[in-house]
Length: 179
Ligand SMILES: [Fe+2]
Ligand SMILES: [Fe+2]
Image 1 (spheres, protein in one colour):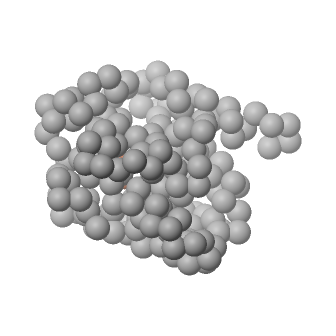
Image 2 (cartoon, helix red, strand yellow):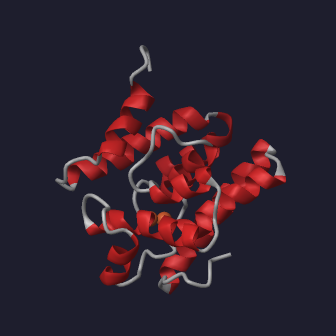
């Protein structure tokens, strides 16, 4: 469930619900243990919790976040979640870096990054994204690469310098020979 301190519009809440549904489906198909499923869903409910918060509030929780204002809500939501008692490093890193990527992610960060992008409510490339969503449980690494390709391209097109974590994330996915 969304935390009580979340500041989201109704349509944002619907996006978060669709991400939760997709991550929950993957957890079932992969038959992950209940504790792991709960970690995935905690990250999902937290990731955009401050997405629609006023700029001052985002700045207060994430004063040093690099890049455009859009990239601030992940670090801000993670900082708030930590202040509210979330201690799982994988969950916090998933939330903090969900717009940027992180080379050191465990499965929580990877699932969130992919489900956030592949949930069916987004209006572009519906069929391509739906195929990736179906493929994820049997090929998480391949799908993660495809999602990174799409998401990092968009970041490049925004004209901002790539944040350091994004560069390291990208290189961690594509630096091996033959990949
Ligand atoms: Fe987000
Ligand atoms: Fe999101």
